[in-house]
Amino acid sequence: MIFTNLRTLSLHGLSRLDADRHNDIVEILLASPHLKHLGLSHTNHFDFWSLELHKLTLLYSQRRMDRNIQLLKLEELDLGTGFPPRHVPDLTADPHYLSQMTDLDCLLSLRLRNEVSYDEPRQQVHVPLLHGAVNLKSIEVEVLSRDIEELLRYLCHANPGGLTSLSFIGLNYPRDSADTTAVTKDIASIIRPAPTSGHSWWYLSFTETSTTPGNHYMQDFIRHCTDLQYLACPMNNTNLELFKTYLPNLMHLHTLIITKGNFPDHVPTTVNVSAELNAREKAELKGDAIFQPFSAHPEISRVSTDGQRQAKDQARERGEKIRKGIAEDLFKLSREIYWARKGRYNGEKLKYIGLGYRVYKWILPGPGEVDGDRRVEQLSLDEARTFKEVSRALQ
Image (spheres, rainbow, N blue to C red):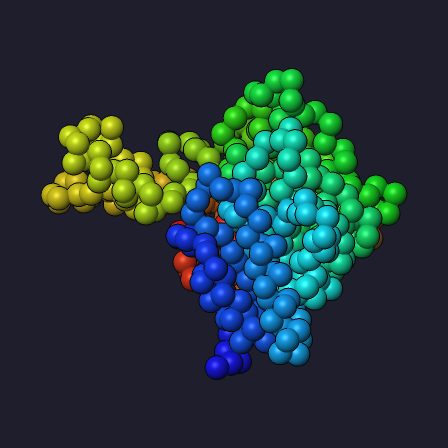
């Protein structure tokens, strides 16, 4: 059987890995010549350092050559627990074994669900395995470890201007080995891995940070990335005011997604809806009063009377007014900066602003309307889901 139309194979959270499971996965890969996305991970976090990717690739390569089948041409690779592209200590092993599974020239996006600290001596990523991935445009990591930094430097030198998108997921900032609470101060090699070749980041996504050092690291990172077109990061009131001072230098920025932050009136700008609901329901079952019925989380409040329902509606309206006002202020500031710039090129104006899972756009004036009639409009949830951070928050 050939799965001619299969484009995505995402096998995360595999409960067991043995010879039979390897055989099943390899047979699916052999039967899917047009596969574009492959995701692999298992659930045994105590066996994070296993060499499942090497085992799988070796078996696939042997059968592929026996059947005279062409290499896969994967465009997206998502590797998690048990499947990091690691070095194999066996001297007889192919040091570039990943190229025996897929044509690395075709690889455009790489996600590594790594789980180590910056000073971890063992490498999760063996950089030579990805030497052929010179057309990579996007990389997403959980933790910025030393091997990731080495990989970024190599890719940016190999194809200056090619790798333009960098995403951090979770609490993921490099640590100083002498102080586990402080992030490293020298981030120049990450901000501009290939300064002499003019490399710069166009897309940055910091999904979450909850520590003061991590916050400072993120601020410094953003301040130096003046070619950004898309930025997603958490912000509180202080960060927002600081970001406004950066905005004049971000001439190309057209999209800002604020992934987390509490703004005036304690209105949350982001919720993982299912997680918040579960936490609320568990607390109610225990009789815990941590969640009040008129919570500032209107989407997840539980109401049982007309009075509570009315209070919930009022909270929602108040929250929406505040969020819309924040978006409108940022849009207006962006336009003021745009018109104040000198020279022939004024840069870009902000087109989209996200506050949690709500995304707003600035509507241009219609026929008969003047410039002052522009207004802010919220995208539908379906439209908002096209932004990766929003889609992840609503899962």
